[in-house]
Every structure is written in C-alpha cells, then in structure tokens.
Length: 280
Image 1 (cartoon, rainbow, N blue to C red):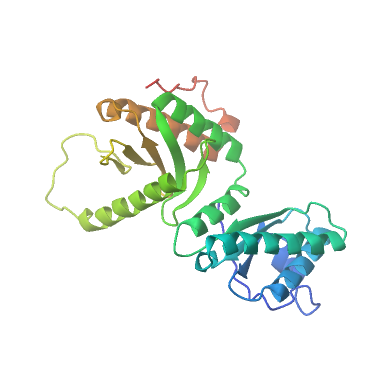
Image 2 (tube, one colour; image 1 turned 90 degrees about the vertical axis):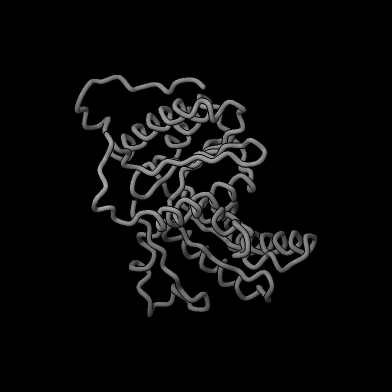
C-alpha cells in the first residue's frame, strides 16, 4: 500500500476552473483539513464547507477529516467549547447546503503530544482495505497471549495501521510509540558491519525485543516486515517466563499477516491447514 500526502495551501479555491479538479481529487482517499484553534476560524470553516459540498457532488466517497489543531494552547474548558463550536458550525453550514450527516470526522491535534499520530492513524485505517481482517488477527493474538493491547505500527512514521478492538489507552499508545524510538536508536548504534564475526547457527532476520518496566508490565516488539512492526503491552505476571510462547504466537501472526498482504488464499499454492496460536 503506497500512501502519499499532498500538502495544499488552504486559502486557494481548487474548484475554480483554472484548476484541474480531476487531476487533484480523482484518486484522493481522504481530505484532511487543518483548522487553527487559536486563530479566527470563521473563514476556514466557510471554505471547508464549500469544499465538502463540491466534493459530495463529484467524489462522494472521499473521507473528510478535520484536524482542530494547536488545541494544546487552550484551557481544558475553552478547548472543549472551541472544538464543539467548530464542529457545530461545519455541520450547520453543511445542513444549509442540504447535506445531512456528511462523512466528516473531527480530531483534536497538537504537535506537543501524540494526538497528531493518533489522528493520522485513524485517517490511514479507513484507507486500509483489509482493516477488519487485521483487527481480527490482532484480537486472536491478544486473547491467546494474555496481552493488554497490541498495535501494528508503520515503523518509521509511528502511525498504527491497525490495533485490536479493545479501547485505546493513550498512555499505552505513547509507551509503545516511544519504545519504537528506543529500538530504532539502538539499532542505529549497534548495526555496524562485523566483517570478522561468525554466526553461531541460524539467525533471526527480523528485529525482536522486549523490556519489563518498573511495575512489571512487559512491552514486546517484533518486526513483521520491512515496514511494519508489532508492539504489544502485557501485564501478565508470568509473561517474561513465557517469552518463547509469545515469540511463537507472534510468528504465527506474522505468517497470517504476510498471507493477508500477499492474498495467498487466492493463489491456492498448497492445501496446508493454517496454524493456530497457542494459549498463554
């Protein structure tokens, strides 16, 4: 899946005849509109609703995502009021255009916490065709491994393309995201070439790591392929003693994941039964 982000100035009218709207919008999966919560957003809301109205007529399947940005600079009470005011204005103006319940999603974002990653993760997930399958596989993994939560991350961007269906805990998400940074930094430090080294048997191709923090919680990371990694949080007291079982279940999940992306069931190369994860 090849995702591209096109960044456009918000003050231009892309539905003006001077622009080729087919070239701009025909292959768009999502339109992300960023509104500065600390500035006068009246004009931005007006231009957004005009854009949504035009898109609904021509490309009704495009997801509209509104990022209410710089929300961190507002007090908690004013933050909620501002977010609700922006949402209400957009919905009222779209209703005036005759659009009831348009496909618009709203996110509170800031660059000073992980909300921007969370918001982009939600945007990307809507564009991932096998999302329901990935969530189901993660649910099976979590239930059979005693995991509290599991995420499938895009390693470099730290956007998660899928997670199990348990509620999102931002602290857990931030912990998993930070752990990716730790592993990447360590990999950069210690991945120098070893010309004179000899291998003592079969070697793992993918990165795999785990750590137990002060309260006994284990963070487990396993690279799935060149781009994706599985990161999970386990609060089971025996987790570190059953590391081999976690590795086995993660490997089974990896095989299933690669099967999903390769659409191997359509190739029907062999009639082998799928492996089942072992219960923790």
